[in-house]
Image (tube, rainbow, N blue to C red; front, top):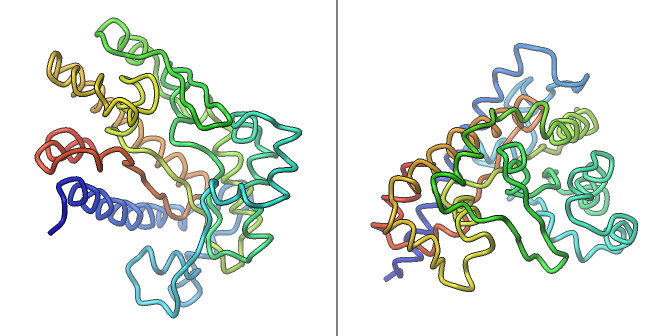
Length: 275
């Protein structure tokens, strides 16, 4: 038998696969228009010519399992560690387009991976929502917690415009798509889902150390505020995913990392409806 947390995680994984397929379907709209920034939409020319990873995301039977590396895997590479010396903070490496592009391409250049995923973070869109954050080199997250209606107002007061406020994301995706046009590689974007992002906003940090105590307490004391926050995040993350697709992402990988800490009933109430 699976534990409750495992069942919730499996449910989240199933949604990851569904959204990946949906993102691929959404990218079809790009085939009717010029590819972004002079990139050719070669992967839409026909199923037989589509890259391996893209075919797998569509649910097709493939000749092998596609492989790509998330940014964490790049840390074993000397070329990445050398770059860190010149760009010591994660936000520099992920928000300076030339640097993000270089890091995104490193596994492809070294190993010929089937996918190239944007070097970024699930928190990257938060400043465009009126919420700043910091990431230490040890992985620690720091955010001013949002636990009141007044604090939440700073998110609702600003329009979410990723095209202007975090344009570096689109710049990198366009360049990746142009570079990889006509190759066997797929360009991936990625986003975090509302529950996981909500835990960071409410906890002000990674909630695993406290068992997500602040999130649990606010769900009890002001469930409507939590629901409103998750709904806003859901709307804006959907917009962010579409922005990535319009910029060149052929597949969008999604993460609800901390939803695995919910029971199945909690998942159905606080994660699933906002995905």
